[in-house]
Amino acid sequence: MVAAAEAGDRGQVPGSRPLKFAVADALERLECEVTGCRRCPRLVAWREEVARVRRRAFIDQEYWGRPVPGFGDPAARILVLGLAPAAHGGNRTGRIFTGDRSGDWLFAALWRAGIANQPTSVARDDGLALTDCWITAAVRCAPPANKPLPDERDNCADWLAAEFALLPNVCTIVCLGSFAWDAGCRLLDAPRPRPKFGHGAEAAVGPVTLLGSYHVSQQNTFTGRLTEPMLDAVFVRALELAGT
Image (tube, rainbow, N blue to C red; front, side, top):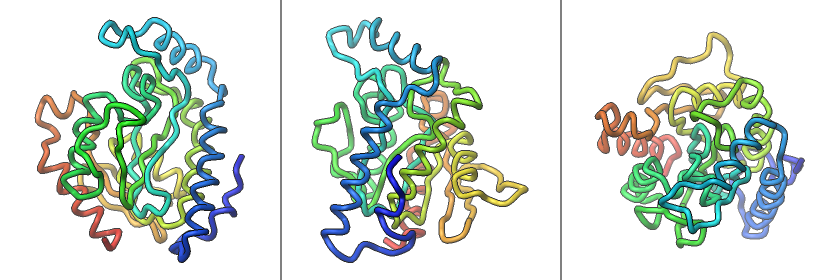
């Protein structure tokens, strides 16, 4: 696994372009390790079956069918943490939240906040660029019924920790849903009793603040549990916490 020390100490903003490039290189090496992971037999079998069978709407597309790495700005102060790739979203496109309805909501909100250069993302090569933001997931493979098992969550925790260590400027983690909130608490080793998740909830753990949001799932967005103004308010707050 890529050594965290390559990126420098947390809280030290990279002061030179060479250091930023070093962080990007380390993240690329970590991506190579993540995308080759086969630790969880159930997830490996499911992601590959989905990629082989495919959904009718995407029958002519070649699915990614591997673990999905994080992506974004290596100098990011904001980290957006989701649950896992969608079976026909990230598992198809190879980029978390890209190509599904949840991503439509998320990227539109990031664009309105000035964090993304475009409001949609449909493919890895569609020109999307993020500023001061990195997007990742607690679990890197699409799980059956979108429900990872505890041991699968724990297997992926090492990848999240390695990625976080290579993002030394992150001071705000936007947790999309309670699963991501729990993963964020574990990542930061938040003291017990763990802070309670809720939309707009905040919890400072050392120099990093967890910021909760309802997940951008269709179950939440179609029912009105999560609205665009609610999601926009989360990212306005994230920018405030990041000092942007």
